[in-house]
Image 1: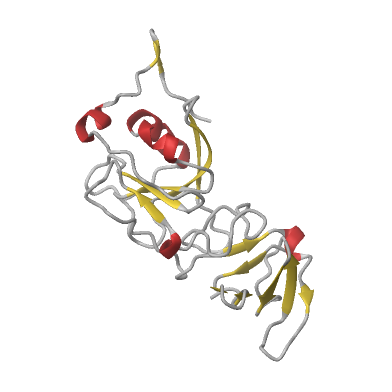
Image 2: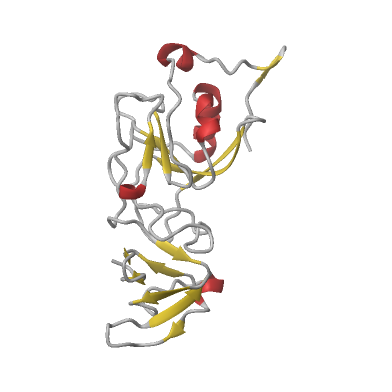
Length: 224
């Protein structure tokens, strides 16, 4: 994991040129909500290549350190210089410790969607609630980019993807009913329904759905 660069006097001051320029105001964020932290990666005007996650995490530590106390695992960092088309410019926070100044970002996965999706081990129900990564459920931290009130992220599907671990997928019971459901899952005292079980399975037996009806606790589709 990346750490702040050290000078001859120890760790460099967290007060950077970026902070001095913007004097960012600490945001008011809700807990347990997918949060997208906005930054701008410097580049030539005609350069639209996305940086790798390790380079972006070092930039965040050097130029956007005040983001760290507001980050949690499962959040995203969005580079506005290339963001705005589907999930371009999105990086996921795998680990963060503001006290020690450490951060680990991950590139988005592409096993489900060629445009990108959350990491495959960010699974639904056992880690995150259904549609947790849906843009309409997200909040934006624009403390360094106050001119952009809301992240432009949108997934290939409107709600994004719900990824189920192999362990949970194996617990789904084939149970066709008159409503068109193909199976059910009992989890933490709740019953969840699935419209699609076969076509939505990945090679490693993870299950993927892209729509969720909270009123009926039904995952409505596979690959959409």
